[in-house]
Amino acid sequence: MSAIKVKNLKKYYKVRRKDPGIKGSVKSLFSKSFENVKAVDGISFNIAKGELIGFIGPNGAGKTTTLKCLSGLLYSTSGSVETLGFDPWQKKTEFRRQISLVMGQKNQLWWDLPAMDSFLLNQAIYDIEDNKFKKILEELSSLLEIENVLTTPIRKLSLGQRMKCEFVGSLLHSPSLLLLDEPTIGLDVVSQKNIRDFIKDYNKKYNSTVILTSHNMEDVKKLCKRIIIIDKGRIVYDGLLDDISKKFSQNKNITVVFSKKENLEKISKIAKAKEIDSLKFVFSVGRSQVSSVVSKILNDFSVADLSIEEPPIEDVIRDLFVGKNYA
Amino acid sequence: MHKYFLVGKINLQRHFVYRLNFVLWRVRNLVLMVSLFVFWKAIFKGQDELLGYREAQILTYTLGIALIRSIVLASKSADLAGNIKSGAIASWFLKPVGIFKLWFSMDMADKILNIFFTIFELLLVVFIFKPELVFQTNLFYLASFGVLLCLAAALFFLLSLFFSASGFWLTDVWAPNFLFMVVLLQIAGGGFFPLDILPPLFLKIIKFTPFPYMLYYPMKVYLGQISKPEVITSLLISCFWVFGIYFLVKIIWKKGLENYDAPGS
Image (cartoon, rainbow over all chains, first blue to last red; front, top):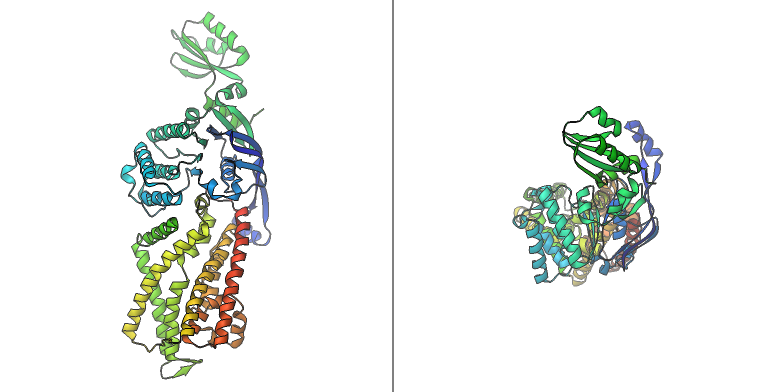
């Protein structure tokens, strides 16, 4: 059963352009010029109930715009979206009870008051029973270690503490769709791991659907089997995370640890090393040349260890974003 | 309803977080009230009647307007456009709450606080200056005054929503807010002085707009300075504006939401 069905979704904005300086400002008073920005340009995908997917792309790719369309916050220019069986733009109460959008860079709690006041308000807004509320709050606040800041005004908290409180506030009503936009931004490594573990458990325990956007590839690697890569408003990859290297990387990494110090010139004649650390060399070699390079190395040198691996996903995705070679 | 009650309560709490802000808010109200009061006292010195008002009537108007302001106006509504512009309102759109009810409950909290302190400040002014005031005893005028006040509060809230919708389109919402909160409400609404001291043509024109029905007409009815048919007419016109602006608000907010880009994230 699909939790989300998106068909040919487009969201175009009109963005005002202005020349720099006073001259540009005066000119813009009399003649306005606009540019049509295609934030999302005809994307289609389905997400099954209970799936946890990573939605990644460079800055300005259209990730947040898509999440906002799925939640009904933004109206589309064209195309259709069905979220949890609802038309999100009708903003039905029953729909809003089941979703949560966490934006890592946006404050949703009352700035002047302690997080507890916002949590109590959320309890009333979502009609959460007292016992359930207490149980979830205890579970979340102990997991994220925020028990001792619940009564401190939000504005007095650090970015990480604030983010954790945001997270708790967004999950109190146990949403069946969780839209997470950079949820680990600003968190220390321990909290990042806690959040990741929690998202994973939450997804399993409640069979909830989770869409995660993150520039932190650790989040994606640890949580998502399937990823959707978006760039310039278009989907350039939708598939398993494990398959991404095969699809986009022409090379494999050969890691060699030599038994003794070898002649660098001799080594470089076989393949160019991309990393050298004492006796350890990493070569990035075209897939078709792997076997010949490996046999040459084994024949010509004394090797202590050798392994052949797909390049790290971070590297593949970085190269993808830089090279824009999505073919 | 519990959630809206809680929103009101939280908003009340927020007033007490920034104590200096709160004190300055009260000082501003008191200074405005006393300035207008002293101004009219000085104008009336040695004169029984001026511009169609006796001294007791104009002083009652001045102090009465201060109380009506606290009942009809609310500062939370004035923040709405900024909230739309900054995108801060976006998180509320995702929650199962009615945005108008939410803002209304915040406004109510604001009003309760404002009314409480305004009464206290009024008593202080009356105690210090001991002015002669007009106390209306006619039940028709008192009841009409009560109804007009309720309509005026509704009208203010709806007009706030109407002007706030500018946040959906404009990059700077200060100008429409200033136009509404100061020019139209305080000047065209009779907040600073009674509108009938101006040339009659001005009042003839302005009475066809919704603005004098928020402050000026309720006060004139309390003073009993307009005839009963005129009272009925002002009640009917107020009702017309409340319903008319309600429908306009529905339309403009629907359009606005379709155009909204929920910025800042």
